[in-house]
Length: 123
Image (cartoon, rainbow, N blue to C red; front, side, top):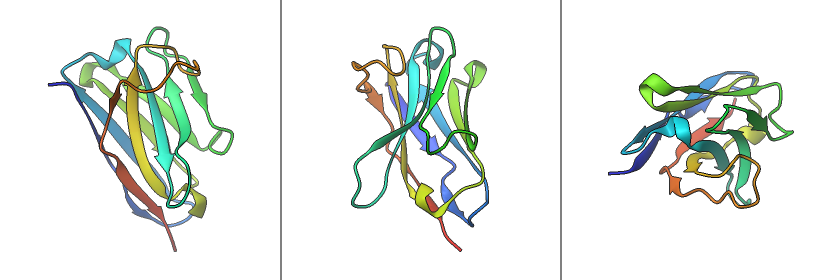
């Protein structure tokens, strides 16, 4: 069964850190481009970061550059999103998705999606 499962969300104070995990089963994540998206209440879903399957290149939304880092552990079939210096505006449900096309491609729609994990930044 093909599945993506996110974990690692929670409540954190401003300036704090969290590490989100996106674990895949039923397919090999290393060959797929894996992206993190987020959606805050009342807002549209936005792309946060992505790692391309073929070469491991990464990209980030301007709002998270320098604070977030996306990595991949092929042995564990898992992609991580390390988040630091968290801000109130980072509060959202975070989703991971996998697609066969390169990150940044206009054809990237996410063939597989996880169920999401809540990140709440609050003092």
